[in-house]
Image (cartoon, rainbow over all chains, first blue to last red; front, side, top):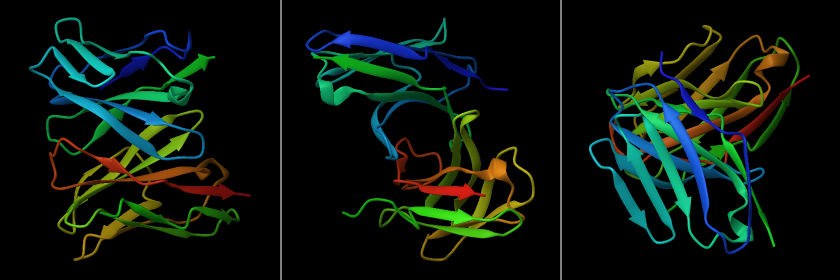
Length: 111
Length: 113
């Protein structure tokens, strides 16, 4: 079945860039997503990319997709303490009604 | 525009009881999906409803069920609760099935004692 993998933890200094990586196995995924979860909260949709794109930029966020290697990354420029959270990548199945999530990467931003 | 509303936010139940959780999607959205989040298993898909029909179901026992009403509001029910059912249950709302954007509610934290 589908599998999505992420590293568990990332620590950066305020003002630096953060890069969170994700690998997936389902080559028929239509869309790939990044969600943010703060303590005690639900999931906030940050951005998504269609599988036939290789890059998408949205303000401080840049998503890179390497479809050949099934590798997705999220770059956060000028990381702030408010960016501290757990970040989940997810893929949408080709029927378009189920998301498969990675285990989440906990981002810690040090002042 | 109001977001996805899940009620209740917190719930404590005893083993063997049953529970019903509610999700009101964003106005105009017709697809509702449910996910279970636990520290051990992460986020796992439960089921998806569109126009009152279950379109997809995850790998959960039959104790987990759901339904969707004509106004797109959805409920999920868990019968004969087990300790392992303790989790954050998240509901996602999309305009239509296969839509790119799935917006999540704050979740219902269920604790089974």
